[in-house]
Length: 239
Image (cartoon, rainbow, N blue to C red; front, top):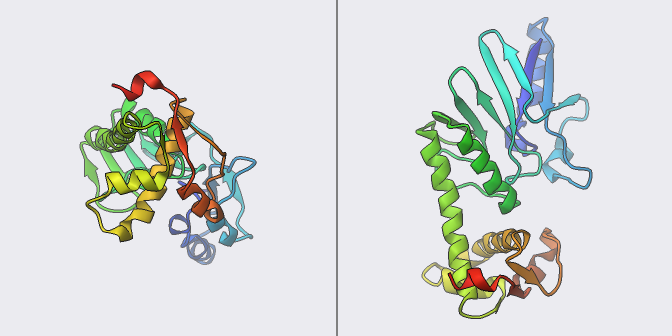
């Protein structure tokens, strides 16, 4: 029996699965079990629409442990990049396979910043010696890199909070025009996507509210750009 645990549903993390299974079928008497964390009942990932229908997928569970020969792999559920994202703890090395929540170069994208930071903080508590990203080179000093990722996001959050200390209401595009004023305008729309996710995190933290609830969906993006957000935590905005 062979195992194939998958970190999440993005196609670049399972695209070669059919070829692997075909090769095993032709060249090996061993079967392979494919595992992935289930999506929430209201969740969907469009990349999974193309997932091979003839492949049975078994559910990954948080803290589930796989053992093979002298390797012990533990599942760590880390939503944020996607709702179904998992990392894998390599017990023998005290290291992490981080998939897409930490990259070998640059910073990661995410769907939910609140969950993303909580997941990174959970990974820090493991004190990993090394990180094996889904993209890019291996990262030594894993804890330092995780803390760097957290600090990067919290610095941007602090900048947004400081803006609310100057006036109580902002739209995402208004925030972008201040925080990204030295960047080319071609980067403002991508930056706005990040600002919207920051605002939703602050909403979950009970610091801001919006006049109208708008789901974070592609078709709603124009409305999200012009949505108005109001500060609700008077004490923190002055700090």
